[in-house]
Image (tube, rainbow, N blue to C red; front, side, top):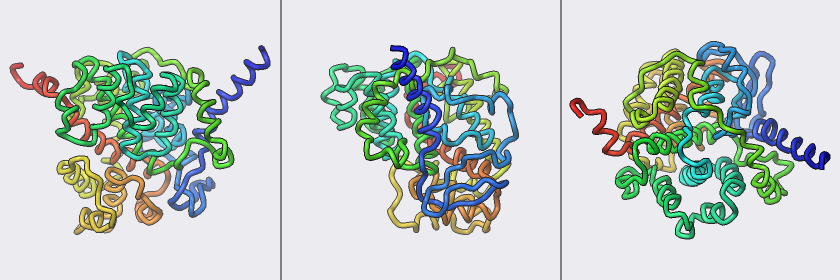
Length: 387
């Protein structure tokens, strides 16, 4: 048994520390930064090394965070340790995920939101983990999108709500299956994954498994499900990462987090780091162009041509146009971020830190917009003067 335990430990260590971090990337160019070569043309650009910290400076506590902090988002190990924003991503999930809703429910939500955003990497990862946390029956129903098969009415209602999060005004959103305390955690989980999917679709490949092992992906998914209690580390006490950054006011688009202090504090810090990095990196014109576009966005997919991108960036100076093009694509069509948009951005910004920070800010802006229409009426009323 000791030998078997050692084998399990070795597999768990490899999955947690290696597979997600070494996933080959697809589609978007290459460059060298301080001697570090990224993927050649034909593989999607995925930052690997610390190419400076133009996005916000160093922070020893953030930099020292390891993959054990990815209790909810193992996808993000691929971005370590590029810049302050990505280092925060390691620690923030401790607190932005919350603790009141069962982990299996949130894993099921992650899988459903991943399906809606058509993020194959995330779909494969979360369906695999869901199998281990909730059982094959629930995992299969979620995988097939057949939520009527679910025997748990609360889970079914929650997943119907999660499926509708890209559709403002949809009936499940008008009658959310949760109250204020649960709602802060549930909405936070949905917003978190709407954010993560944009980062993943921009930088990572279509599968969490290395190419050499993909012929055996069926076996690997079953194995990953069995090992998920060990692959997914235990959650830390709420508030454990809040001391890493100073307190910040909660933005209006995150007011759904207000009922739970630790969630509100974590999200406000997270948003502040992303926003401060964007202010340092991006021109006001580029930021304003994306913000104006998102204010009118109702969750729809953009047209298949590129005319809408050109129209969104029309009239901007060269630098602002390159920045806006990358940010608009990351926010609304991250699967279409290509070598052209990355190279244009790099003309004005060196290093992986700048690239990751720009994509992080745009992705969070889009997720925040989704959070606005997910905010229930009782949460809005609670913020009104005199209520």
